[in-house]
Amino acid sequence: MRSYAAVDLGASSGRVIVGRVATGRAGDASLDLTEAHRFPNRPVRLAEGLRWDALGLYAGVVAGLRAAGPVDSIGIDSWAVDYGLLDADGALLGNPVHYRDGRTEGVAARVWERMPAAELYAATGLQYAPFNTLYQLVAARGTVPFTAARRLLLIPDLIAYWLTGRQGTELTNASTTQLIDPRTGDWARDVAGRLGIDLSLFAPLRRPGDPAGTLLPHVREETGLAGPVPVTTVGSHDTASAVAAVPAADGERFAYICTGTWSLAGLELDAPVLTEASRAANFTNELGLDGTVRYLRNIMGLWLLQECLRDWGSPDLAPLLREAAGVPPLRSVVDAGDPGFLAPGRMPRRVADACRATGQPVPSTPAEVTRCILDSLALAHRRAVEDAQRLADHPVDAVHVVGGGARNALLCRLTADACGLPVVAGPAEAAALGNVLVQARAGGLVGDLASMRRLVAGTQPLKRYEPTGDRAAWDAAACRITRR
Ligand code: ADP
Ligand code: LRH
Image (cartoon, rainbow, N blue to C red; front, side, top):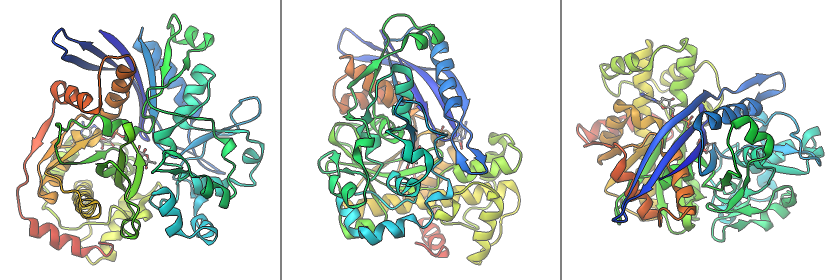
């Protein structure tokens, strides 16, 4: 039996989860997870913009490791694209900027003047999102922290650096910067050169499974962990870790939807799809474990609901979802891919405005707004799953829903209905599981991706939702929103 601590920093909460993995005599293994610590991750709005509380997150990680107790190794994953800048002494320069900050507005248009969007897509395979690290770096140019910076560390790499003193750039997360060539898994030097981005800001690339150092003495003291506890590089992009833990059977033709703050809906492929049609549909090619490509679309996700809950004074979710289940279906839907929903604030009003603008009934009660959001998410899931199959010529028979949204039975049922496919829901803590499994693999306990998935499927509770209802109603609803 070995124990691994998975530090999983999501946009809405951070958690430290202990995974215990055992290999049985017959070669079969067991896997169980215990949550050692969970702490909120709240963006902080300052006069200069929206920032992450990086020190608060680090403190949460240290408290979590203390609560976790003795472990054989630690792995760290987090949301993508964001980073901290370090000065020549390795000290953090300012608070890491939140990807929802408005500083990247209009930046892409400037970038595309130097490198047309089509060429950028052909070279990096990354969807357009205003917050891709590339656009953030162009926006940061000339600012005081950027000018003083000698090193850039993506968020999980920053936490790993604080724990170990060692610097690296983990590949799956690096693939969200828009500075990686998804065909080679190496830096897209031509892109960086043309856009004047100095790649020496980044630490050397490292891959899931690589050692990432051992805990510094003061960290050992603070966490109470004795001995040279190793930090292992995992799929440090949370979505890479989550997809690694999708409990698909060998040979199964599946789509996945990682539903948390975002819904990331798409396919696992062997090679990127870099066609113009794929770019037009805004599909991304991020790198996953073992040379896989995560071909997916970003959908606003449960962020829409999180922001409404914040506006309503944080009522309990369970009764609200029960009430929403009783609201008539598909009365009004919004485009859950609309970047207009990216920024925080006034979400119930913005959802209502979007319904009004498309001539639909305006949801007013929290239950009605919630139903509108969940119907809209299911509709966006369906569109992404359909588009991905077509664009990649890769048909599927089932959809795996993982992440916190797998706990939302109404969302899972609506997604099955909208997609017209069975939904297998769970695990909710897929990112932490993928994180643990890569550590276990580095320790020789599990084999390839298929065997990791067999272990998840055999040990974690999953729920299956068969599609029911009227597909035509979903077709009709899709027509009501302009951006089909
Ligand atoms: P992230 O990693 O982006 O922070 P998570 O994967 O933790 O997000 O998912 C968080 C979301 O999951 C919440 O916003 C909530 O909508 C949903 N969720 C979590 N627990 C439950 C639950 N018990 N019932 C329904 N939904 C849940
Ligand atoms: C989900 C996620 C997603 C990114 C977004 C910024 O947590 O990593 O894959 O696109 O955050």
